[in-house]
Amino acid sequence: MTAAISLESISIVLVKTSHPGNVGSVARAMKTMGLSDLRLVEPKTTDICSADEAISLASGATDVLEKARIFNTLPDALADRSVAFALSARLRDLGPRLQSPQEAAQEALKLTESAVGAAFVFGAERTGLSNDELLVCNRQVTIAANPAYSSLNLSQAVQIVAYALRTEWAAGQFDLEEDSLAGTLAKGEKLATVKAVADLQAHWLQAMQAVDFINPDKPKKVVQRLARMLAKTPLEQEEVDMLRGFFSDVIRVVDDRLYPHEFERKKP
Ligand code: SAH
Image (spheres, protein in one colour):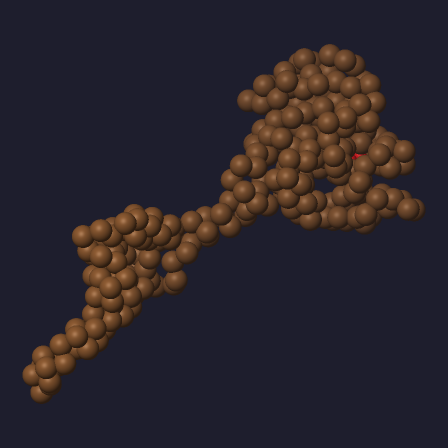
């Protein structure tokens, strides 16, 4: 996953919600986890988002309520989404493929990375999602629960999905950090300083001159290329030491070959 992924581009769709308090709590559940696109399909009243109970339970997330959009049908609400995850505790014959919230979150984030719009669809408080509504969706997500009483409150179900999205997203950010400067460092190693790398570069050029790879008066683009290459990856001090040891040997062997008498003289 890349840093460019924004949780804000993942939609939460509530189908036929009755209680304004639930809509307010959903807004709060979303905002705490970094989600902001709320869509309502056929809510009990069209002004459900401005009801006192909704505003009171949304607390600091009234901006999510204000931006929420209302649609007449589920397909309308999903018109700009390419994948929909239906939340339901009930198993259906020939329903969509089943996933856990974590699996679904991972998949949604991967798809979002490729600019595919993803939505999580939640059913009405009393009746849940109908079979037809479920079949509009590509996946069914079930929150593991007590089999004797598996129906969570709507906003709590949204909170669990939003949390899964948040933690999977954060894990993706962590992977990115792993690729960053600190992440590339082998355990217990120290990164070389800029000065150490500059000295390495000078030593490298000296070795290139020694074997006549470059003319010191006209090094052409080699100096820039070498500098650019060295800037691409942070080097560990051990790596700098190894390369410098190698260049010292190259220079010494070349010197010895060019000046065999000196070599004789230098021998103990
Ligand atoms: N009585 C309804 C459940 C309504 S709860 C039924 O039998 O389906 C409101 C919504 O919260 C559900 O439609 C579903 O989208 C979500 N939800 C609640 N508990 C869930 C669970 N254990 N797994 C997945 N979704 C759940």
